[in-house]
Each structure stands twice: as structure tokens, then as C-alpha cells.
Image (cartoon, rainbow, N blue to C red; front, side):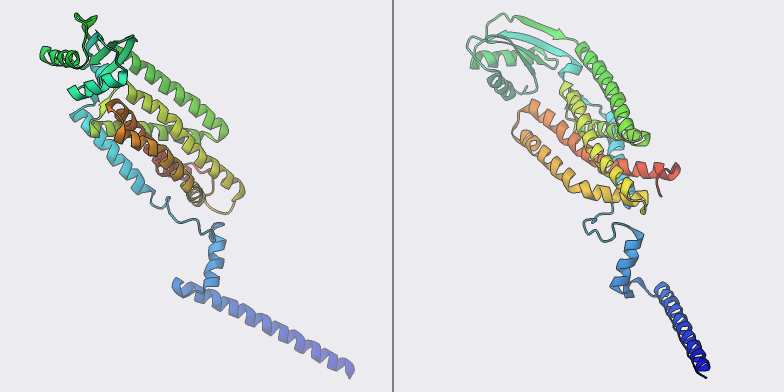
Length: 351
């Protein structure tokens, strides 16, 4: 009798557990169906948070504020418009080449009284030739190189300098110079750029991967094209200083790209859950403040030079302004879209 009662109680207990299990499964099934059919805005906050955390490791990171990857086509289109406009204006107007590229007049003048190169620069600016190349050869003796001058223009310069400072006549040198010097500089600059590209390619290839290395080269080419485009659009004087600016910008742009690449590499090591675009967007957001701060700090003295500097310094500062901005822009808006497109075509990381 006791045995029958125990058996009956066990059956009722098993039936109750099974019933509870069925109710639980049905409840979960209904919850899933309702979650699929219900609008997203009606879902509970806790459920949305749990779902987002499943989708991405960075779902709860509130520092991710900008979707750079989602809007990458707009950034690429913007920079293409500027480069195409620069190419069109180059063929229409060409560059505003300086003395080194055009040749011109060379006068070596000995002054009757002591004068500094700053004072001589100010005198030349007052006459209207502030972009002349000045070189101190001996005490109170300077070489003045200008664009090709007519006899009237040359007399105006000499008469004004003689009146305000005093010059010895005849001049030590007074001749025309050919633009051959610029050809040597241009050739050497191209060789320097080529060597830099090879070194950068090898360095980034060893430190990261070949695709990162090639994208870094594409970013540098983008920066050079953007600088040249702005020179063509603004018609600023293009001279040997402009070439020095471009060589300087190569190093600046590379350092900014390396920072992003390094952050991406660290995230790819620890994050096996998210896709490559998500990791890239997270990496850009994390270094965004650092990049903007570094760029702003660099551009502050450059802007001061543009406002207060002489004509020569303004040309140099203009190139730096465009180059530094282009370097930061390409690291954030040009390189990442290329890497994403490459990974879609030749998958190496989770898409």
C-alpha cells in the first residue's frame, strides 16, 4: 500500500516537472516569436542590451559615436572631387611655378651700408617682389633672384634700393639664369620619394601585413595628389619649398596611419567575435581624439605663419596646412575603406 502511494507521488512529481518544462519551452518560444514580430522600439531595454552585446563586443561602449565605415563612400567621393578638380585646373592653368622652375634674373648687389636679410626682404616686398630669392654671399653683399624682368622692372628695383639703402654700381653680377637648377631638384625629389616609398613598404610589410603596407602607400599617394591639387586650385607659387613640404608630409602621414593600423592589429588579436568593419570602426573612434589633438597642435603655428609670415613663409605654411590635413584625412577616411574592400574581395579577417 505504501509502495503504491510512493509510486503515485513519483508519477505526479514527474508529470509536474514535465508540465513545467513544457510551459517553460512554450513561454520561451512565445517570447522569441513575439520578439521577432514586435517592433524594435517596443522591446525591453534589457533585451535590447543583451542582443546588442551578443552582436558586438563593443555594444556597451558609449565612446563609439561615429559610423566612419558606414559613410566611407561619401569621404572617398569628396576627396576624388578635389583631386579631379585639381587635375582639370592643372591642364587648364598649370601650376604657378616659382623662380626655380621658370628661371629669371640674377643680380648680385653690394650695399653701401649694413643691412640684414630681413630688412632687404621687407624692401623687396614694398617694391612688389617679396617672393624673390635672397642669398647673403659676403658682408653687405646679396644675390637677388627674381622671375624674368624687363629693363623697366629691373631699373625700378635698383633705383628703389639705391634710394632707400644705397648700392654700389656697377653690379657684381647681372645676368639671366635658366631653369635647369629646378630640373635637378625635381629629379632628386622624385628619387627621394621613390626611395621613401620602398622603405615605407618594407617597414609596414614587416610590422603588419602586405595589404596594410600597400594601403599605406596609397594613402601617401593620395596626400601628394591632394597637395598638388590645392596648389593648382589656389594658384599658390610652386617652388622648391613646395617639394620640401611634400617630403615632410610623407613622414607625418605615415605616423598617423601607423597609429590606426596598430590599434586595429591589437583589436584583431583579442576580438574574434566581430567582423572586420566593426573592429575598424571601433579602432578609428578610439584614436580619433588623439589624431584631432595632434593635428590641431601641429596646425596652430602653421596658421600663425600664414597670417603673420612673409611671402616665402606663407608658401611653406600653405603646403604644410594642406599636407597635415590631408595626412590625417587619408588615415581616417581613405585607408580604411580600401582595407574593407580588399578584405571583401580577398577575405583574411571575419567579414
